[in-house]
Image (cartoon, rainbow, N blue to C red; front, side, top):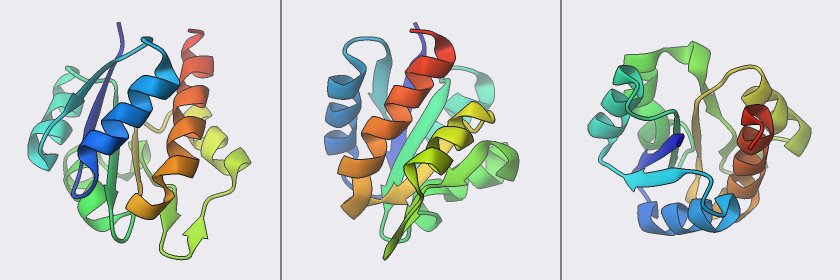
Length: 123
């Protein structure tokens, strides 16, 4: 079973609950601190990362960017701006694995990310 780790600085348990609801048991979901979450991704212990903060890219993705590189990380929302749904889906399709967003946008972006990951994985 694929694993999703929740990091970032805000609303970790709420995001975990949303992922579990949207995924309907398709994934194992874990909450970790930022360093442990990024290390889980780097080691292959987790397949995807979601994190929230106030800016969408700072505390949400800093450790993932540092350890995984920009090639697999995507900021899908920031204050006042949410990436278009089509572009979020394209990010998942293109191989992005770590997603950062503002906590205020979690209700919009988490379902899209989880739906597209499920489609990409064929589950």
